[in-house]
Image (cartoon, rainbow, N blue to C red; front, top):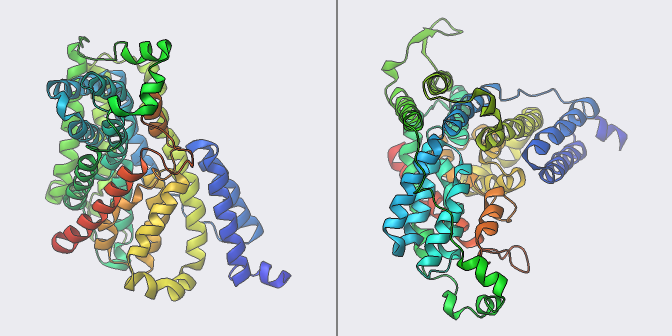
Length: 461
């Protein structure tokens, strides 16, 4: 027994190591993204010092890209550029209130695509709820699907941590697979796949639940004068806000930076070449391109858009982004340590299975995403394994949507915020927890995205 434990490649030792990884993930989720990264460090230490596994490689390139993107986006937020974008979105929604259930999720999806983070959705929730209430529409219908759609937008954004991570992972494994996809190539599949899921979930939401005037639970609550007053009070709006020209300039700079990233990714002839390790010329990697462009864009916004540099690090975008860095750091390093040691055994045992049933990879990605509450962290942990086991990179791209699995339990901050902003209580967590407002829109979005993405990947890539 002792000999089996001491041998890090024995069956018993592998089982114990998997238990350590799962324990670290489950314990870490209780303490949020930052805690997940830190507690994953405990699992890493146990693997190295107790089981004697050689430490893997932390995803330094991915982390630096996250930091560059978040730094630029946080500077944009401090310049009030995000509010300018949200005000424009609100104008569209209030111009067509009767279509709020369709337009709201499209709006939150598009904002995420532009900004690279789903956390921009918080300001939109009270606006969506107010429009729905004034039009007599059950708020759960547009709000729940808007929350899931904001997270689906991550899989369609050229500057999201998840998209950058996926492109980096495929590029880093090009020596094994012989294939490397640029961010525009990935987005040619990911954007229509993600958008299809959002639209189908929105269409389903049109008739979900009872209308407020027929909802017995809601009507019973309305008998309470205090509750009725809270529901009937004026909602939040950005339409009365007047933004300085500097805020609008910051939006122009940020959107220009995104366009530049896409152009440089689509036309590699525009990127300089440098001698590689083998002496042959290699194009500047997109990881470095994104880092450079985002740093420069952030600097321009900082200098020319009247930003209070002392408050950038206090913005919600910065805090959420740095939490993602820690999460990716700890989880990916721990996972890489385990899989680098056992990749040959795993390929022998699972290679045939995943190649004959590639959907098993999507299920694994979905589950891990729920465990780590991060699309990027799930991809960094699972996508390299899939590529090592022989899964076609095109399949990996096709199943990109499966990286969003944290809707399964209503514990993600944006979902909880969505529930809190719905004054009617129609957006809710059910008696059995799993029967909450986000479960069906989430599954519709992810399943549709995977089906459409897989079909597109076989045609385009």
